[in-house]
Length: 237
Image (cartoon, rainbow, N blue to C red; front, side):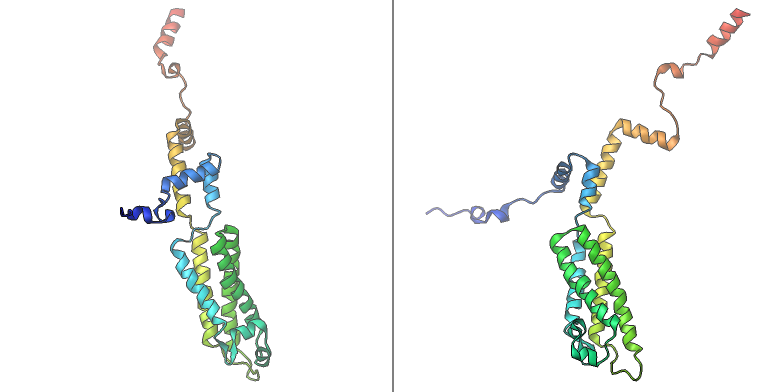
């Protein structure tokens, strides 16, 4: 029996060629009706994590683990989140409870939604909740360290500190992801500049804006007729 070719035995998905950079640019422009500027704006609405996906996952894992670690003394993170009788008996403060809600929302739930949807709108919500949650994590640590002497509460434990570190990583990562242009945006911006440079009319318009000079539209404007005018004056005299 003839032997099967190894390339033929592979699944079709593994042999399918990946799209090149030019193909992705052309596809994005085609979706935007042929407008490069519109394609560039459309590309900015899709989140491109790149290398930021790894620190984002680490921050999310740290925040998630903090709920199952000691928050303050015998109180765990999930006790504070659910406001259990144990949390109430150890005088858990309101900033600590707000922090756990923000940490669950901006450190776990919204990052999962951002990764799955790749939507810039969800990513902006994630950035906002992560920023407020990071601030409340610092506030919760400070509140735990300044409890009254008569309070039954205990100082912050390592679970709260790990959660604060995770929220810091999440907030910084989302800041970098949202405030930098992705690779497709940069490529489309470069294509738009090349198109504007190749367009003679656009190039001349840019030159007029830079120099403030008007273009010469005919050869008659550059003819030196001073001698002819002087001769005409002498003939009249």
